[in-house]
Image 1 (spheres, helix red, strand yellow):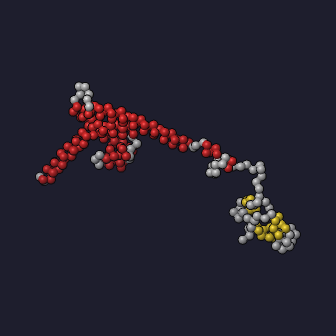
Image 2 (spheres, rainbow, N blue to C red):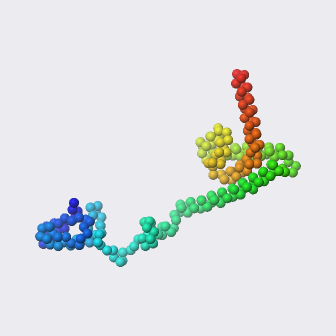
Image 3 (cartoon, rainbow, N blue to C red):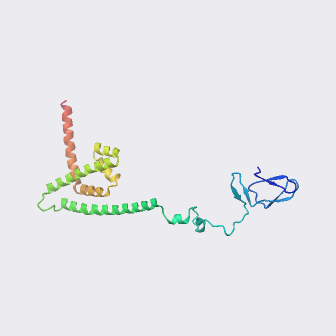
Length: 218
């Protein structure tokens, strides 16, 4: 279907041509006169389209991304200069790596010290049973702190931490980003985990016996 009508200056007839015509001239359909095709013709969308055989002038500026050979369609200046959000993300990743390294260092030092105190020599003038009690108290306090952190981060996880036994430990090691709290609790569990398991077992047996006695005497 024709898009452009060229008017012949001799016979006055109109000759239709396509907007994508690549020839330099076209013959008039009525008298045969050679009609020159303009260098730029309007496309059906209303914009200007360059002829296929038209050459760019040497003065035509080359886009920056073509001049640099990036081929991505993004100006080179924009590619060289990261956005503010990208810079913040990079700083956040670096900070997280530093915090991870420091938390591992804290865990190694604290765990080594607590394990040495618990299983080797203890502390001067402090009985081993007292050290165990302090360790269990520290684990209990950490348990409550983890519940508070879960409630602060996510109400659903906080409720699970309150209702489901031992869920706070799962939340701390698998969900939470509190790396230093994770290092402290891991060191406490490594040193006093066996004592904690014995305490939990004893409490569970007491609760089981009371519930069984209540069911039998109702």
